[in-house]
Amino acid sequence: MDNQHFCIYIIDDDRGMRDSLAWLVKSADYDAATFETAESFLKNIPEHKLGCVIADIRMPGISGLELYQKLSQMDFQMPVIIITGHGDISMAVKALKDGVFDFVEKPFDDKVILDSIRMAVQYCEHQQEQRSIHEMLSARFETLTSREKEVMDKIVLGMSNKQIAATLNISIKTVEVHRSRVMEKMQASSLAALVRMSLKI
Image 1 (tube, rainbow, N blue to C red):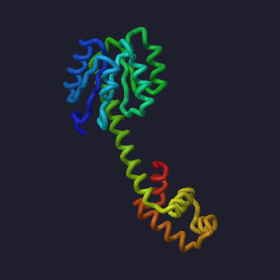
Image 2: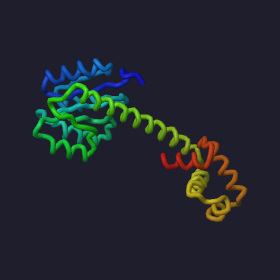
Image 3: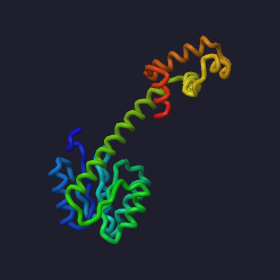
Image 4: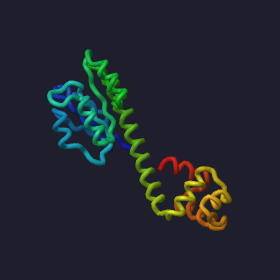
């Protein structure tokens, strides 16, 4: 995917830092949006946009870490990179354990922050693809009747048609019909494919 499909959201109360990061991001062909405070970002949270968030760990009002925590509670999907000062490493390490994508220590080299952004963007793109696959499979699953769902559950457990028939108290022929419909509706080419789909759902 072209870099311009991604937007990097830069949140820092230091205007010089915001402007230099925005310039750097644009030089790598990403879109950039800057915010002076976490509060202003929270009021303008992007919808259905790919990219990542870069936030300074220390800002007036809501800090970078507090912003991350708020975004997590909102099920915000973009990765967050935290910019830290020298005295904030222990906080940054804890943030990583809590789920922050990466932290970059000031003063940082352009290549370091760009590498972090690229990894975050790739991660975001991968997550988006996985969500799309999940939504597609869930939609297929919902086309199954309740009996077909029961049969599918038994199929992916590795049960034979005979075992499924005995468990559900139906004929083997009926199981075969349901099994065929499950494979057709789920668009599964094999039992292995159906099992993988079931795991994703």
